[in-house]
Length: 254
Image (cartoon, rainbow, N blue to C red; front, side):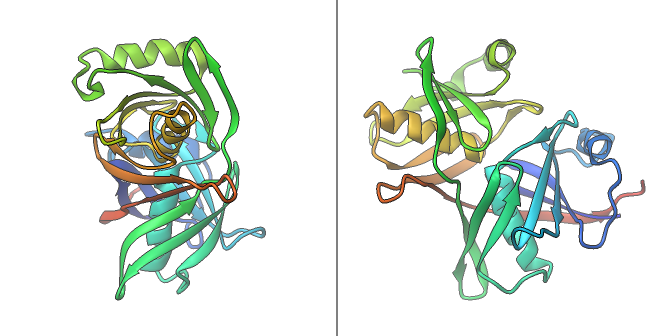
């Protein structure tokens, strides 16, 4: 079985072309392939599939085999994947996910994909509990704010695990930087700490902007890279723009 390893700001997944491969148990496959040292090593598995509702369909499985409804970094990489693998010559297309249909746009520099933009839709289920913001961007996020550098927090994994056990959601710890940008560390449901989270960056921007801590358009700095998030005034949609990189291809002996 052919696979491609890709990452968006360090959030790495294994991508499989579902137009040509028959994956009967993607949950078990995600566990085996995602394991460091004994597998490919990744935050999870993403299948690129046909859709009768959109141009393509994406299914995302976390490192522990659980299926996620949405993955922002994964959606950007799907954009690069379908272009590189000759599945489309479009620079804008629709992508079916378990949280709805998203629009993906390739930012081109000549023939090179310089970045990928995803319309992540309108934030849902916005609320505050115990001073943390609860926001769904296709998947549920709980955003905590701190005045300290989240990258320097020594016990972040323990902290993230405790809070995730309390609410069964993705957990973000966010610092507002002097120029209004955001610095974020994330603990994802089903994968643990990851270097970036696209939907989490969107949730962080919405939470911070709603509290007047930053503008509606800002950069979110994460351990693996930077995403530009724009919470549009015109229609309330959140637009995420950032890198997508292909790391390598290989064959998996099932």
